[in-house]
Image (cartoon, rainbow, N blue to C red; front, top):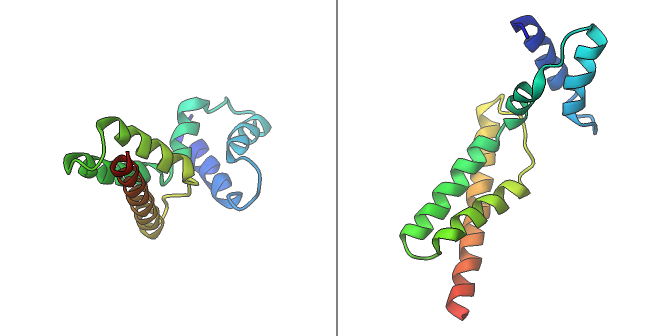
Length: 124
């Protein structure tokens, strides 16, 4: 895939973001319609990451800090990260405000999970 094709796919992805259709579908339909090769799974994965990197980082920081403070167990780190990621709806990382909002929400959700796990451990 050349830079022009990547730009075209990026524009299509951005223009169709609001539609209730899988954005992955656009990455398959447009190249087929224009006679281009399939961009492949790696390209699709990169375009879908969006705010997910910020979410994973934020949740992991909260979880690891709670572990170091002996509030949760080691395996709880993965549980918290998985739960926060699962609850996150990936959005575009095209503006810093989107990334900051995703980070803030992930930290709040991770902190709630730490509190729940801490209460459960104390009750047991």
